[in-house]
Length: 450
Image (tube, rainbow, N blue to C red; front, side, top):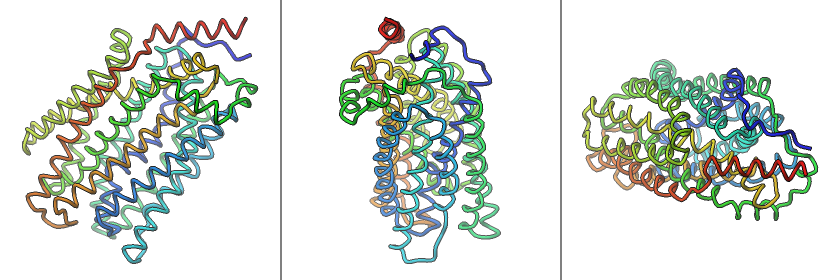
């Protein structure tokens, strides 16, 4: 018999922090990929913007296929920690290999970029899908799930800051002394070591209290999984909204280095900009749980997206004004917490809904399709950036033409604004309230103890 859910239990703060440490690695990798990888491909490795965009799109779609396979196998094993440990070890090593700069032809370089990125995504998937599934086994209390994810994302502001603030400085100083290729290799090695260490803290400290019964895990088939996913309406709504969230956010993030380098003419200013956003991001993470408890996760998600869209649009209207840019950035950073914190708590709630609806207990699979939306969103964002840069006449490491500068500005502001507003419209279709989740948990308990 599965252990009873912790319907009213408070998790220790230390364990919440340890769980959040597990996401430090993913945020280090995603921040480097989202902000710097495209620029590394175009300005350091030396492939075209279109080729770089295609590499990132194909590799992330390949990653999406891994998501389903790993999610299915992890659910069949009914244990998640061993997957997190194995995947994090491999991901740390393979991430560094992505930033090697072989002296090959442009076509061979593009092929290497595609191969190294695709292989890394396998290792990344092996730990990130089971890690996210662990959130549903730590507690079944819908409010504690919001709390643990709030703590998680407060912690993950640290790697975002470290990457966004330190990486431009390190690349500038090391690049001047030994070249950009070696500078990227050294910095990514250091960040990969930090990512691995943080994951080990999570594996050693977090307890999986609510475990999948082995007999239920063994009964899972591909057909059952597909039927469970198709019947899970709330999960499908959340996937659509989160997909749009990631397109908007990663277009904004990927265009950032281009905007500061070419439109403002000051790459180092990006570090100051990202540092200024940190306290507002943390504030947003801390405010979401009480707001979600008062008004619901759906409201926190929806209104956070609306304010984010307005902040992105404000950057366009700022027209290069630094005070206005910083104000809009800070507002957007605080609002961004709404969709981010709420969504990861909401996907845990869809686990019990799916079990109640179909009888199949799938956890990692739910998170695999959720992360799939993130994966495809990131890849599509990179592809869009590459296409817009190419269409507007972007040329690496040169002063840009006015059309190219305008394209960069649109990528940094109005395009993310439109996509984020669409995200808020999609989440309006979410129907799984906190009260309904509690009712479903009670019904599941009754059926299991009958």
